Image 1: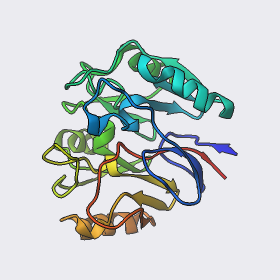
Image 2: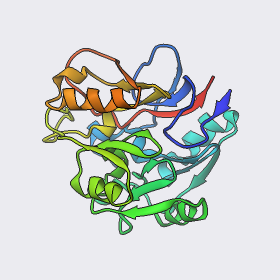
Image 3: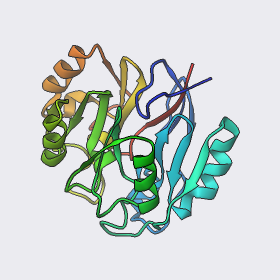
Length: 240
């Protein structure tokens, strides 16, 4: 059992993750239901927990007890944030921080204050963006590159020299909404493996995505047939 040195970026094959999906070959902790959220979002992991270091996470009051029970046996410290989760934006995304390497993308006006202060204390470079759904919008590839459909996040990353692929959210399914987020339908399951909840070929930018990931020596593995479905991210926790 090994912890991730950097959140979202496993060095080896993942053995434990948080996701609202069944994933062959690893143990999956299903997110708790957060009843304040719209029904389609109630089990989105990236709205109910933010993994900030190898053994530390911050949760809203609604999901703290659940994650303390689920993750403390693995040695994780669960810190309770101040902000409760609300039904509408921006109250639904106080913990939705996009982390890639030592950089984190967030909206300072939206981020939970406890989480924000901890991110600073952990030494993260804070990149303020207009987008509150920053984790949903960021698919980390390595500590210096990511995929996003959000122009403000892409601009912030490129301004500090990160390698960014800007795509469209078109064709990503999130029932009841015009579209879902690319970061919300995927997550790394190893240093060279990206799990995608659907078939990448259904995305208009699939060839550009494949080329970008191939350059990083990352292969794509589909969890299911059909269009990409936003499930609130796949959050890796432990590796072999």
